[in-house]
Image 1 (cartoon, rainbow, N blue to C red):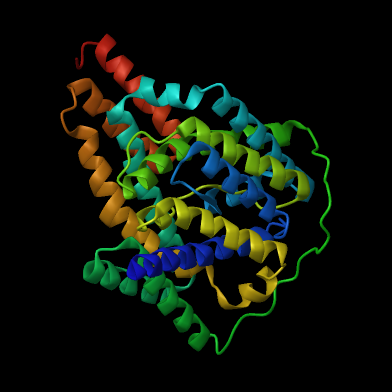
Image 2: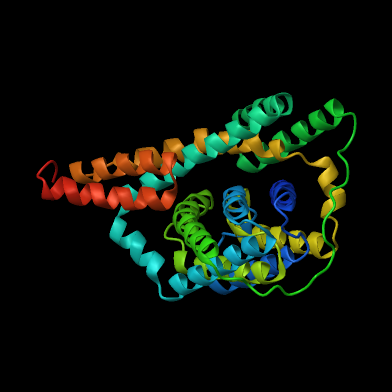
Length: 359
C-alpha cells in the first residue's frame, strides 16, 4: 500500500513538472500564470462530478494555436474563452459522445493512433531545439520504460535526468521569467480573427478530447470514458482562464491514470498546480525546468504505447470499408489534426461504400 502511494505521488510530481513547463511556454505568448489556477479548480470539480480518471493540464498544441492566431493578448485570451463556450455547449448537448458512436471504433482508434504520431513529432521538435538535454531525456525515458514497464517511472526518471543535464550544461538555472502580477477580469473582444481562432481551437479540442480520453482511460484499464462530461469541465476551465488572462488548460495525456489510484492522483495533480499558481511561484520555478525535459516521455508514450496499441485496434476485425477509413484517419490526423482526421475517416468510409470500392 505504501509503495502504491509513492507511485501516486511520483506520477503527480512528473505531471506537475510537465504542467509547469507548459505554463512557462504560455508566458512567452503573454498568458498569465496565476489566473490559470481557476481552470484547475474547474477541473477538480468536474473530475469529481463526472467520476472520470482524466484530469486537465497544460497542452502545448492549444497554447501554440491560440498564441499564434491571436495578434495580441486580448485576442488570445478571447480565443480561449470562446473556444471554451463552444466546448461546454457541445458537451452539454451530448454531441461528442454521438460523434464517437457514429464514427465507430476503427475511426476512433485510427485517430488515437494518429495522435500518437503527433506526440512523437512534438517530442522530436523539442529535442531538436535542445539536442543534448533532449538526448538525455530520450535515452533515460527508454531505459526507464524497458526496466520498469511503467509510464509514471518513465516520466519521473526522464524528466529528473534531463533537468539535471540542463542545469549542468547551463551552469545553473535560467533567468527568472517576468510576467504581469495583476489578477483581474478581461472582457472578451470579438472580431473575425478571434472567431476564426476560437473555431480552430474548438476543432482541435474536439479531436484531442475524443482521442486523449480513450488513451488516458486505457491507461487506467477503463473503457467508454464520459467524453461529454470531460468536455464540459475542460471547456469551463478555458472559460475561466480566458476571462482572467490565464493559459488554456485541456485534456492531456496524463500518466496519473496509470497510477494505482488514478482518480486521487488526478485530483492531487490539479490541486498542487492550483496552489503553485495561486502562490505565484511559476516565475521562480521556471528557472529550473526546460520544456525539452518532457520530450523523452512523450516519445515513449507515442512510439511504445499509443501507436502500437491503437493502430492494431484500428484494423483488428474491421471490414474493408472500416479498414480504409481507419488508415485514412491515421494519416490525416498525423498530418493535420485529430478533428480533420475524424472527418476524413467518415468521408472515406462513405465514399468507399457508395463507390463499391469496399463493403
